[in-house]
Length: 286
Ligand code: 15L
Image (cartoon, rainbow, N blue to C red; front, side):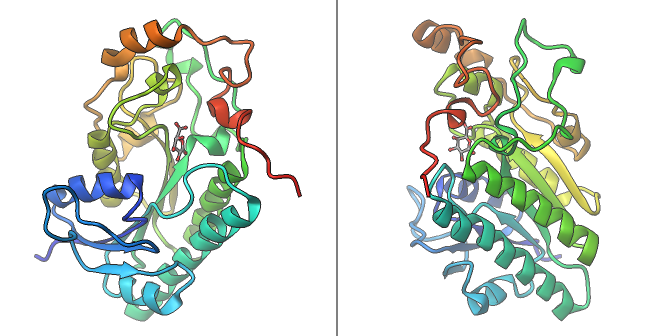
């Protein structure tokens, strides 16, 4: 049978670029959407599939990109704190346009709407106090997936909105969707906090593939990280989707701890899940 068609939004961004390199080996036929040009990956002559250069507010382009698609990995949006207006357009309105187009595609086919995996973030709950070691923490000390939303920025607030939007479209229109609260997805962790939150790119692809293919219905929220020794949160819901992480940031711990020292629990930039997002980005006063 034909490979499942997966629309990747934000294909030119950091996560999109990593996933373009990794997801084709899972058998997906990718379609790439971004407002910016999608450049070929190093060593490649061209993109991994058809490219749609469009804003999410371009309804015709989004409809075309979703035509016949089986699933969407929604990575598009601003990936850090910005002015409320920018977050509103790119993340809040952008997610609305995406889910509306997904609903409409389901209506067009008369079958199930494409499944949506939404790239949420730890910053949806960034003001949650982080548990302290020794590591590994016992299961009861881990932050559960049903912890209340505690956004640390307008950016984090947009991820709370995206999760609620996913819930609305699941309840109201039967869109099957998974929100992955991603930790820190980079080739390597670069500070001590990331030792707890690191999602290796390989595990990121494993987790997205599990979320895209799990037999779940409705809206499911999971945390997204590797099987780090210093985990702060519960990976159980992600594992229940069929995700088996392969990586652990602990190999990077000696060098990072030698360079940066142990975190100071009295410093609000270090004592919460969201780290510096809780203190550093300006709140862009009205
Ligand atoms: C995020 O949500 C950001 O998109 C990413 O750039 C990192 O800052 C990450 O969180 C993090 O918390 O490390």
